[in-house]
Length: 220
Image 1 (tube, rainbow, N blue to C red):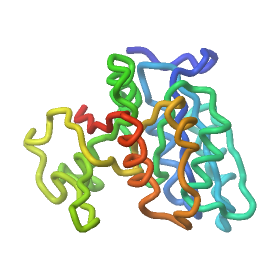
Image 2 (tube, helix red, strand yellow):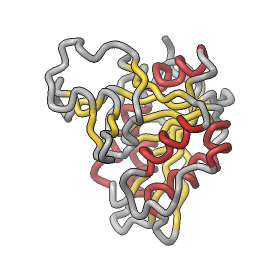
Image 3 (cartoon, rainbow, N blue to C red):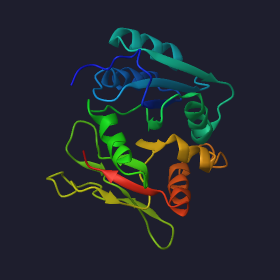
Image 4 (cartoon, one colour):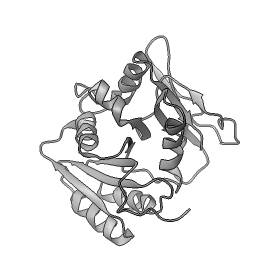
């Protein structure tokens, strides 16, 4: 693979939502600068940070040779509202939502988008996530129990390939996942009543299932 030609029309848009994230955004954007595969655009949406997150994002992107757009929101619109602002400003057919305290592998976006390109019944894809600096799993798909409590497949397990099969699941965590733009439009995006944060992605996935769109965990 070769570095992405940023002048190309994006197949995917990566939306990184920041809130007082200046200490995290540099490594996140540096990892995004190494992406290979489908053409992407990077959009950083800042939720009225008080720590200079927008400036930190611009500086980190320049240092990494990465072209980004920064959207500054005032006041803070919460996780759902911030992500809605990001995908509505995006041009990609697929929208990847990424937390600012994450670092991704070079194939991250292509791995999330490819299943949706191959299978039109898949509307949402989620990533395998490790705890920092380890092979300890944080997420390999989401579970919603009958009583409404949630959990992640594989949480706390050392990864030895036991979760290396694509699987349907109730939801995928919002730390790193992708959604078809057309599905977001049908759903009206995230429900902004989930404020300031938590469970907005669970709700989005449940509503996607009700529309007949499959939610899958992608181990690659």
